[in-house]
Structures are given as C-alpha cells and as structure tokens.
Image (tube, rainbow, N blue to C red; front, side, top):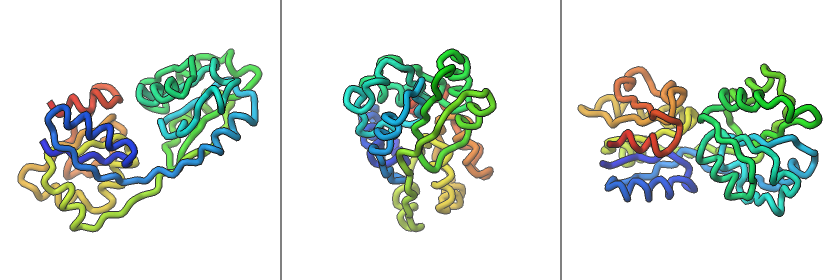
Length: 238
C-alpha cells in the first residue's frame, strides 16, 4: 500500500521505516516544521522546585538530558500523554514516568489523582504552540497548581494543489496523528480531490478527536486506532 505520512520530518523517518518493514510504500508530507527552544525548558526546570513535570509531546524534551539539565527532577514524576512521549522521558533519564492513555483530558485526571504531590510545589507543563487546551483546562478544573512554559512551536508548511495531488492523489491510506495535523491537511484543500476519487484512501486517525477534523464528505473513510499509539494506528493497515 502507498501510505501518506503527515508527521513532521523528524518523526516521519521512523514511521516510514516501520511502514517499509511492513511491506508498504511510505510517502512523507510533513505539514508542520518543529522549532525547538530547549534553553527555555532548561531555564524553566532550573527556576523552581517543581513537584512534577507534564509533557504532551516528545518535542518538549528535545535535547534535554535529566542528569545535566534537570538533576533535581530525575526521580520526580513525569506525566506523559502516551507511550511514545513516555519513552522519550525515559530516554532522557527520568526514572518515574507515568504513561497516560493518549489525551490531555485523561492525563489531567491522572495527575489530579495524586494531590499529595502538589502540597508544596506546582506542576511544570512543558508545552508547544499551537496546542489543544485539554490538559490545562483539566488541571484548572481539578485544582492542580501548574505553570505552562512554551518550549517548541509547530510552524505550518504550505503545498499547492499540484503538490498535494502528487503526494496524496494516489495514496491508499493517510496517517493522521493529531487533530491539528488533520485540520491543516484539509485546510490546504485536499478534501475535494480525495472525495472525487472512485475509491478514496482510508483516513487512519490516532483517536476520535483526530477524526473530528475530517470533513463530512470523507467521514465514511475514517478508521480510528483502538489505542492512541502508533502500533495500533499502523495495525489498521492490516
């Protein structure tokens, strides 16, 4: 199968290798470029005695190594939104990593279930822009003290109609890992061409929230992963 990968370039390579190993043909179409600010993360971590960290993307810990950049935080909890993000935290050297169920709302609930952590110090959320409000909204509603520091930005990339057709026109499936990415793909005008195909590609979404960005005319092509991780998403390819 020819599979369109809409992840940023720094992640598309890993996904492409997995697809090739499965016998598929990956086609990269990154819709955002990640701009990192690791010094902001280092400064934020060093600025206070935080009770715990929260991260909702692997990008939040870009170039961060716990031993050098967060020695006081190595053994404090790191709440990660999903398995891939948790894996990055462990690679960085953090030892107490909680793996969430794949969305910010549920992660907020898991954090709030540990109220004793935040009696003397708040949570530090290392975030990106743009971002969904679910984690911050959930933390506020559950009265968890926290501070958000923006440490990376997702800059949109542009494609014209000819480029979209060349990349997406003959695909059998398209992978969407976030609501933001799916919304960007269709904002570029891709829906009309796909809907007009006799057999539109399968639109494989990491979660129901991601699927909400798919236009109504293509709703019948949506398939949602059983769990919010890459393994479950790629399993939809059969």
